[in-house]
Image (cartoon, rainbow, N blue to C red; front, side, top):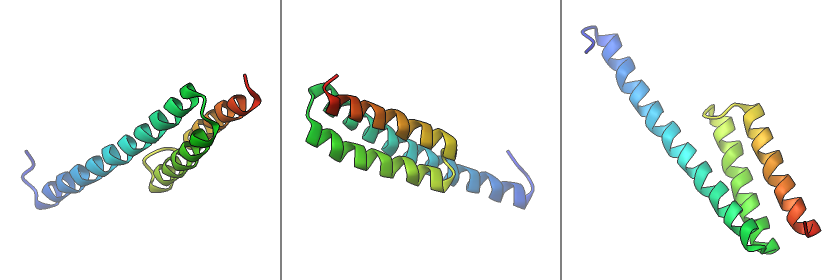
Length: 90
C-alpha cells in the first residue's frame, strides 16, 4: 500500500479508470454478441440495427481511449463484412 498522498490518489484514479474501461468493454462485447446472434438467425433488418449499435459502441470506446482506433476500425470492418455477406445471401 502506498504511503505518499499523491500515490494514494493515483491508486484511486487508476481504479476509476479501470472500472470505466471494463464497463465500456462489456458494452462493446454485448453489442457484438447481439449483432452475431442476428447474423446467425439470418435476419437482415435486425442485423442492420445491431450493426449500427455495435459500430457506435466500438467507436465510443475508441474515442475514450479504451480501444485503439485501428483496432476499432478493424473490428467494425469485420462486422460490416459479415453484414454484407448476409445481405448477399452467403
